[in-house]
Image (cartoon, rainbow, N blue to C red; front, top):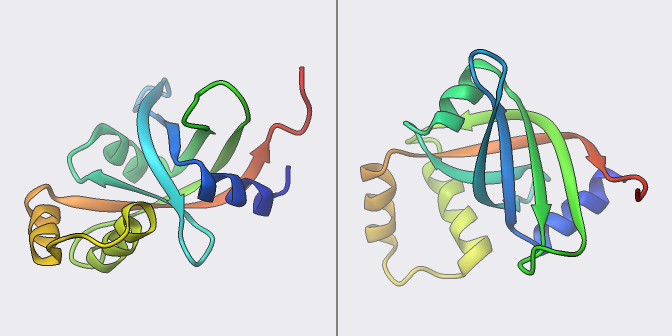
Length: 136
């Protein structure tokens, strides 16, 4: 599958399972919501204290299995390298992430305060591989 085809799918379907690697190399899986930003990165909001963020700070390798809201049906797996963007640099990208998924927030000051209180980060994934390329 071409990376741009995977990006198109993710821009339309936001539910996914993220796989990162624990310190011992075992997988750590997290249900997440993702989207694609204007630069073609897959983006995810998380908390600075989340295990997936700690894992990604140690090992940037990441995989996502993205599927439709109905769960059964088409899906894609993407693999890549993640960068964790922390506050304050993450604030405007977090605003853009929210807008891309939910539209306008009723109180952007309240949203920004919540992002600070929750110690939110933006995980930005540079895609390297996508599939499936064939059915089984």
